[in-house]
Structures are given as structure tokens and as C-alpha cells.
Image 1 (spheres, rainbow over the protein chains, first blue to last red):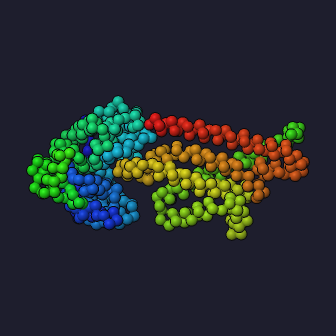
Image 2 (image 1 turned 90 degrees about the vertical axis):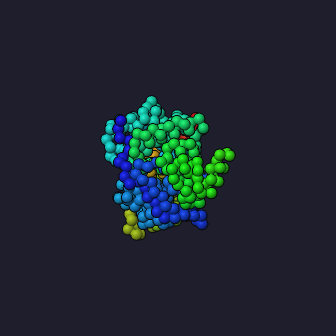
Image 3 (image 1 turned 180 degrees about the vertical axis):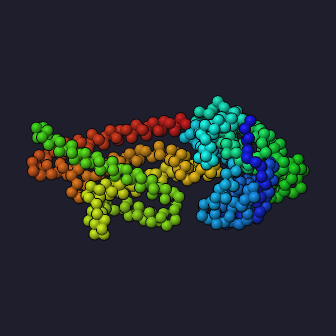
Length: 261
Length: 219
């Protein structure tokens, strides 16, 4: 078994991060730390800013103020965000961050194998044959070894998402972000994707920040559950505590609404 | 139709057609490269360059090709920019059609889902790799019919090059007619020569579009 992830470092540290769309403040001076190797499930009502947290960490969104550190490196410096260009240090830090999207976002013009090898070859300069070998191993890990030469359009949503997870692992990340990765899937396909994520969690020490609506999954995989509302953290703690016996009235209301669903 | 006469001038007509085709191909190469550059500048909103290009594109799209041709042929030399007529002709065609090609290409770029760009960014692929390996392969196929139609338009519109002394197909035909007065024979033959090239291209585009639609329906 090849190493799944890079070395777990100090994880993610967000401090006082504010993100605004026009008048709407999506993140309101939020503080959130994820220790290296920790698995954190991020839950909360839609519009609470969960996805925006991930997108800011992935540098898909520029922030208004605050600081985001990945493995100790500041990646949200205002000057960088404004010019849209990452300094060499930021680019290096971001290489350790992988993200899996709700809509998979596989490249439809490439085979499954090429989806997995393009970044290692072009960004890390890995030898092509070596990248292919590693990619084949990752496809076996997600149970899709037979689909290496297929195009994404031929795969089911669940299979595409498993490929997307393998693709993010191909970069040997130390931090993985999961953005509602089962929300676009038919219910019967959700299980296989969650199973793959559990497998990755069990076989590596990659830091995981997981936005999910699957409470059972959040409970299983999370070392910690963070409940967000209105752009800030309302309550956090061990899953059994936050999900079964929440202290905050807003957390209670959210979970009650989910149960009555 | 005077076939004996046609036979005697046919090599000259073919020579004119050759000039037309070469000017079109050169113009197309220029239009594609420039169009791609313009589309990139607009999609990435490169500061300053983006605004300058937008104004230029507006100017070119809203003035006649013939006027642009005269401008480049008569005005540029006064500022020390000298090319032979053929080069000016190919440049003018390329510049004019690059503005239309750019619009088609920009549409193709923007039709690529945002998630594709984001996946590239998260994987750390640079702008060049993103464009070449991910965006262009998805953006180009849907705009190939538009680009081919532009090529056909350029092929036909290249007749304006006659106005700056280039002996392409139309000019050659007119010159022959001015001495032989064989208008019917000459202009019929000329029309058929344009058709022989443009018609297969038009049919090819229609076939390609149908296949493309089939494929997207299946996917």
C-alpha cells in the first residue's frame, strides 16, 4: 500500500475570517481550527457558510479580513487575494490541500486514469509511468480499478465521486476538504462514497474537514463536530455530545428539524 | 457560355482562385490566433488590456471590412508601417474575423462549467495547463461550426482584396472581362469556382453539427 497522504502537519487554523458578498456577510469573523490528522464534520443549515469555509481554505474565494493558515503557512494574505496570484510559498502550501466537490468536477475530456495523473505529472513533475501506477493503485482503493480507461460520462454519480476522491488523493494531500460530496447523489449511491471516505480515513492520517448533511456519517467519522449558523461557529465538541446532547439552543433547533424531516 | 474561351483563360482563373484560397488560409490562421488571444484577455479580464481590446473589437465589428482594408492600405504607410498589398490583405481579413472568432471562442470558454476551472485550481494546474488540457478541449468542439462558418464568410469576403490591387479570383475575372467582354462565361465560371470550395465546407459543418448534437444527447 502506497502512502495515501502527505505528512500530517499542524492542520488548518482560521482566525477572524470574514467573507462578504455585497451586503451579505457569509462568514462573520469565524475562528476554526482543525488539528493535523483530525477529522472534523462541519454541519449546519443551508446558508450558514459551511461551504464558504471550505472554499476560502481552498482559495476559491478571497476573504475580506482574517487569517487562514495551512500547516503553518498563511494562505489568505490580502495582497495575494487581490492580485489573484499566489506567491511561491502559498502555491507550495496549497499543493497539500485537496478538495472533493459536490458535483465531482471530473474532466469529461479525459479518461479516469488521465484525470488522476494530470496533476501529479504537470504540477509535481512525477514521472508518467509512476503516476499511472500510483493512479491504478488509488483506483483499486476506491473499487474502480476496472474503470481506468472509461470516460467519466460512462460512470454513475457514485463512481464519479469515488474517482474524484482518488484524484484528490493522487496529489498526496495533507488536508482534504469534502464539500457535501453526497448531496448530488441518488440515495442508493450515497453509501459507497461514504464507505470510500471511511476507508481513506482509516488508512491515512490526512486532515479532513467534511461538510455534510449525513448526521450518522458525521458521528462515525468525526473526531469533532462543528455546528455553524449565520457565518460563525455556534457549538463544537465530540460527535456524541454535539449531536445527541447539544447545549446551544440553535443546535438543538437544527437537529430537531432534521429529525422531524 | 463560350467553352473554348473558358478553356483558354482557365489557368488564369485557377491562379486567381489560388490567391483567394491562400489569402483566406493566412487570414484564418491570423484570426484564430488573435481570436484566441482576445477571448483569453476578455475571459480572464486582464486589466487595461481588456478595456483596450474591447474598444478595438467594437470598432472593427462596427465598420465595413472594405473600409478597414483601405485604412490599412493607405493610412498605415504614412506612419511608416509598410507591407505589400497581399500581406495587408491577409492581415485585414485576419483582424476583422478575429473579432468574430473571439466572440465564438469566448462563448465556448464560458460554457465550460465553473467547477472545471475550480477543480483545476484546487489541483494546482497552472493557467496554461488549465486552458490547454481542460478548457480548450471542452470549449472548442461546440464552436467549430461557428468557426467554420466564419471561415466560409472570410473565403467569400476575400473578394474585397480586389480593391487594393490583389488579383484574387474576382479581380482576375474582372480583368479578363474588361478585355474580352465575355461576361456571362467569366462570371458564371467564377461563381462556380467559389461554390466548389464553399459548398462542401457548408455541408461538412451541417454534418458535424448533427453528430455533435447526437453525442451530447447520448452523454
